Image (cartoon, rainbow, N blue to C red; front, top):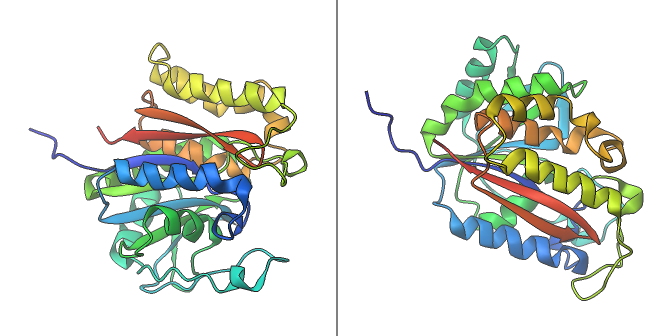
Length: 276
């Protein structure tokens, strides 16, 4: 029996600081250019499934509204931050399929027919799919941020990859808010952060080294807190959990490509896997 060809991709990306990527903030120039280039490298998907760092529920929920509104889940920004539009359609059928897969794996997920998209969805997708012509659904993180649970969520969602989708983990591999340099731009140099660097290098090795077997990658990600400077980079781990979902969906295979992007003076990795 042959496996049908799929153009699906599993992608973990940084989504930047709130609406700043769309407000001309110089510290996001490299990230914006990267996300546009990354999207251009990939076949256009039939749908996008986003796991965003900005939605945590118990049990996990999946958006099923056919026309989700946007949630401006940030404050203190200029008026244009609250006028951002991204009119992508929802995909109720795909949402129910995701709920069924999670439930079959013992994760009691539910559909949410009222919730809209948070900025972890529409900020990066405005850059990657600016026409908003691809339907999207969003899956919440599991409240409690248990690493094993998020790996299992990814494993459960793997059958969606036959749908020619992007499974998009929208987070930030460095998320220590006190350590960002808001004044840093592409031409400026921030004070180096060796803790930032050591954790990013660890992630790149764990996720991309072909000498690391799948069971080893899974174990390292399960115990990510033991990595160098893990808690410096993630005082709270909600921006890392989308990566674990992506890793589970990818079967803990070495990444197709790993990118290192400078955002507000700190390094952050993005990881691309193509569906087998």
